[in-house]
Length: 357
Image: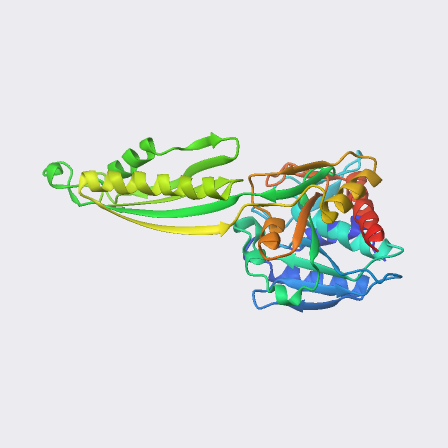
């Protein structure tokens, strides 16, 4: 049986940048079968659902979730354990503790538990690029009605909710003209976009709500009045009504600016997920909090304005919370996790399973 450190180091050495997770999913499937006797199946999107039988329990099935993909640079990761018992990459890549530490902790906890309910380990694709795997998860393959997503940072984290997230893909269509010879005949799509951006609410709108224009591209040549400009914007709020209102304000700012200039605007609006928060007194939250206390920490029960696989599962009818892994500086080449935290995270999940049993 591999130690949790060996499990983790073996997993991070298998490349799985977003949209290239196939080899890792195959590796994880074999690992789960070998270590846990799991029955592993893929849904149509490529998410992995692994079923593990109960042990000395007649309790209801529980899902434990992690994601397969990593951010870049995530090719050729080589983990190094320092004298301080902290695991880092050699420095040219991320470490991928986000989220392979979570999966290692799940595997170690399941196999070490003295009692456990039936477990479904769900490994999603594309979490880092828009929660694509969980959004496309075939929930008919999942029996569990409660889930714990092991993908947070601090080991005391218990994340119980998140925001409505709306994306806006905006195209402004003006009129091209020679910028030196006939500028008055053109309509600058870039100027229209700039006008709209300066008029719309942006940044921190209130404690629950944010808005942002993330990218803007326009024009073809320096001496041409730009005919087209495309933007990618978003808004989020812990209040669904506020998110909808913010998206409407952003849309109206572009429509008004375009109308005033004689331009046109096309806006594609996508609701990625809806705001949801689980009652802090709900059984799934109490179980998570008790598990955090079992390793000597006080749970930090909260909602966040970022999207999580747990939020998507809640939108699909499964009560889900996020637990921490104890890794730090995710999405950077300085990412690290201590061996102690790796083991503590596994103990937390083991305590959770035994209490649910």
